[in-house]
Image (tube, rainbow, N blue to C red; front, side, top):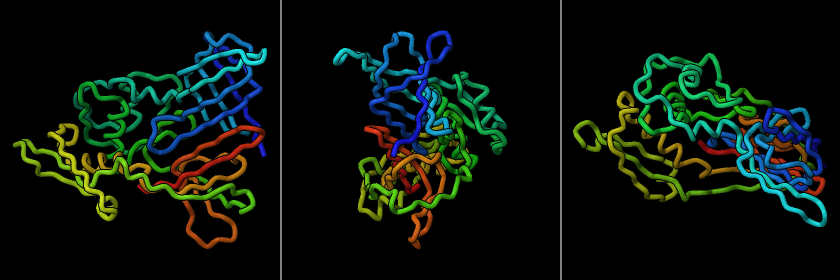
Length: 304
């Protein structure tokens, strides 16, 4: 079972060309990454030096819009095979420095507007206003968005659709899968980056603030980290430490389901399997692979 795909190369100057003959395509993103990632190899006889962007749609759903971060062509058996990697434009939020200093009475869109404008990146509107955020020199725009997300909603920012930055959980679509469509199921326990406890110094240099990852402690993980006073979190030091724990905890506990086909799945969709009584699973990560005439969609449920 293969889903119809629309792969387009964006050329210097802004024109696009439809690319067929894909040998393999793999698209992925999750709630912890700054953007989607698309890799693949196709048979194409164009000039790769002119390719500056790559777009992908699956069925009627646009899933990726990014820049051509790496592209290579080589001739095999008389045909040109083009291999590429494309990161979503929103990844550049982690590659640019924000305006440093204090910003008062801002929401998510305000932070997006006051910093460098990245092509095709948009920001969720109507989010709560926080009294201030402090942005450190030589941090990233994504760091500033993360500080806002933690202060306003206690959660990390994520990318919805192709390049929209959001901080509120999407409502998602309720899905029920036929057991016949399921390729595999599994679990992952990746404890390699978990921290059990983190500390931050106060103005006197004493490590007066701390936060504990109860899941790490329950699993017997002992990894403690000490951080200097971070002015970004002067008004809520424990929230800053909780952010560090969330980042260290990511992907440590996941459930996986792989199914045939792609039906427009998106982050925060909820799914169940027909005939089962278990609670619905919330999608925290998506991976779609097209190869050998078959499309497999893998969904990850991640413990926050």
